[in-house]
Amino acid sequence: MNNKGVGLIMVLWVLLVLSLIAWGLGRRSSLEESVVETYRGKLRSYAAARAGINEILDLLQRSPSTKDTLYSTGIAIDATKSPADIFSHIYTGQSAYAVVQWPAQNFNTEGNKTQLEYGIRDEEGRININELGVANYQILSALFQIKGLSQPEADKLALSVINYTGIGPQAINNSFMNLNGPFLKPKARPYENLLELLEIEGMTQEIFDKVKDDVTVYGDSQNGLWINVDTANNDVIQAVANAAARLNPSINPSDIITQAYTIRDGADGQSFTSDDGVGSIASINDPNWPGVLQEGISSYYRVRVVGVEGTSGARTVLEAVIHHTQGFPGEIVSWQRD
Image 1 (cartoon, rainbow, N blue to C red):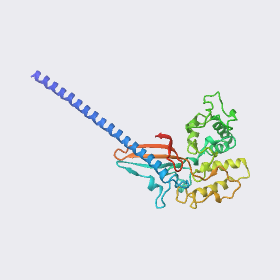
Image 2: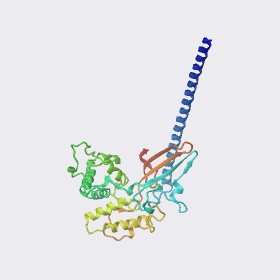
Image 3: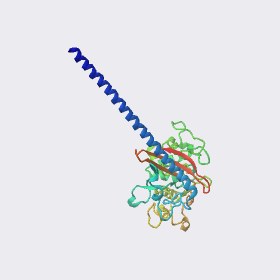
Image 4: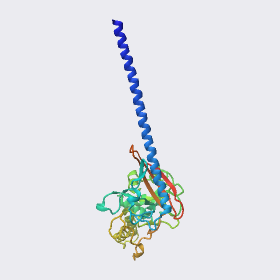
């Protein structure tokens, strides 16, 4: 009788062990299936985002804009459609993508709210730090002041930025760089990436985060610094106006800012609406108008595409800077995956 009891207990233990093994194998299989499905979702979302980049390259060549504005940058938009019609929720089978300018901040929007806007951004509506020198460093200094630095701090940091490249006539005041400090010595060539600003003595992550959407390393360098008034944000326009007033105290920067907003935003005074850029800089008869604020067709555009896989909800964000000359295929010069 005892032997039968012991045998029964052993059988039960064996069944328990086998059950645990079977449960473990089943759970492992389920986990592996989940991992595979997640990976498949990420691949599909990445493919959707890549499709968005390719579509932008195609549209830039087939339907280039005749004037870059906040509402229509790089790509002409049919009068019967809006940027959201063209760039939001584009389906590619099981996935979809959207081309977004996000967050759209430092513009004149309804209620001054940060909002999601669709389309691509003009990189030449920003301050090109590769085109700054001792003659115009005040623009960058004024931007730093807008972000909260005092004028002496802003001047020192702006001069450190232009001295870091170590090239050209701008690099004549190395006293603004501590060459024996923990930061890199002048690189002897232009900036290639905004992250290089973090190597500048005095530049903190906080300051960098505040200015990274206002400055760029891309732009047409043949004609010196120019900023597209039709696509520049409020802080960039204010920095240019304030810098002009520094050089000429008789200038009222508020007048320049008001005129720039009117050109950029149109009669409704709101950014990202269909009348953006309807006015023209040619209508301004102001001897104090800053020469760097111009109108023109950009050669560099920033594209941010969000790809979403429909089943798993997996998301991939791709950001690229495209160099495009009308009549020629665009070229991706910078690529980042978030």
